[in-house]
Amino acid sequence: MVEKITNIKERILYLAEYKGIIKEKFFEDLGISYGNFKGKSKFTAINSDVLVNISTKFPDLNLDWLIHGRGSIENQSKEYKTNPTNNLKVNEAEPVLQRMPKVVTTDNEGRDNITLVPVKAAAGYLNGYGDQEYIGKLPTYSLPKIQNGTYRMFEVKGDSMSPTLHSKSMVVGQFVEDWVKDIKDDRVYVIVSRNDGIIVKRCLNRIRKYGNLYCKSDNRKEYPEPIILQGEDIIEVWEYKMHLAYHLPNPADLYDRVSDLEAEMNFIKENFAALIHK
Image (cartoon, rainbow, N blue to C red):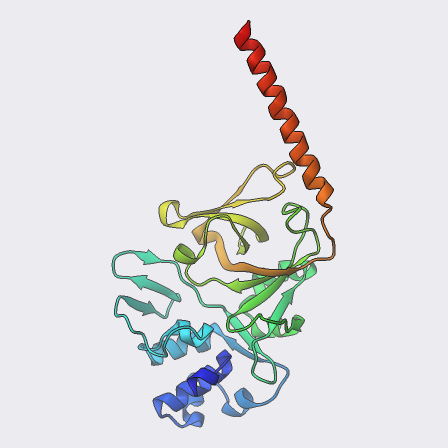
């Protein structure tokens, strides 16, 4: 049966079966109505309180399996211990920043929704990212080959990532739990932060070394200065998986830039050679 489970709603239901607990009793202990959970409503919101209650009740449960369907249902390693109070997974040797999404929603078939956060809703998202009522009011979509994970879609504001991403593009990101291990250098991420709001940047991960992310724009000509985000300022991290574009970049722009660079290099070489021969 495990192989056929494709979303978090089904995994929670399977967990009750796996533990041999009557489903009504299982959900009552979690503070959820079993009838509402299994009902075919527009969406089912599973917030962080539910996930924390589950991880507290079943400390041997592999949260990576529960949220993303990766690995086995039970932890195979005793290297980690879970702190349900702050949702951090802590290594005995050193702290590791690891999070769970505050709210996960599924459609009436139990499939994970992709919730869209448009620019006009970005400010509200900073306060409502953990509010299932707020998340439930945002539009949701389903996209091909985007499954078996927790995804969210964000509208890009401005041209700081041009020509890679243009303003009003829609970026689909997968939730990143372990910021230390899973944020890779020079990949694009959507970062939700307390002071800078929602930004889409190419990142250098220096959390382990300095406790921060070094966030760069692809449009270095107009946005040369990076944004440095401290770990405690970051709320969520979503790794770029795909985007919907409403503007196709003109390849001539890239060719012109290369030509300009070649001309500048030739100019420098010629002047350098002239200085040597003087």
